[in-house]
Length: 145
Image (cartoon, rainbow, N blue to C red; front, side, top):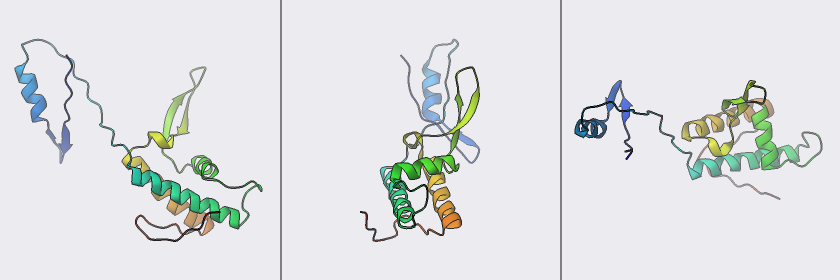
């Protein structure tokens, strides 16, 4: 029966005493161990905050009549952000064996990737459009129509 252990590496040292203790209990022989980075899922507050930021951008774009005349929505802002490279990229295998870089889906982002995306969004809209987005935990009043 497979066992699951969490090990950590900090300051160059592996901390995995439970794994070592378990391995010491096994009879002599060969064993296969799979090591993969633990996924730190994004938090609900991060996800909510990203969508609030996109809602503010959509509202500002609509107010300034930016774009092609279609209404800006959170989904349209998200698509724009992905086209602009504000999301982390991943390799995707296309039919015919071609590998290309594509933006990751929001639902697949971990905590670090979500932080990266939020930072990129805040910086991009300030630099490109002069839209100053609120920092986390900054109280703002936003009116959505």
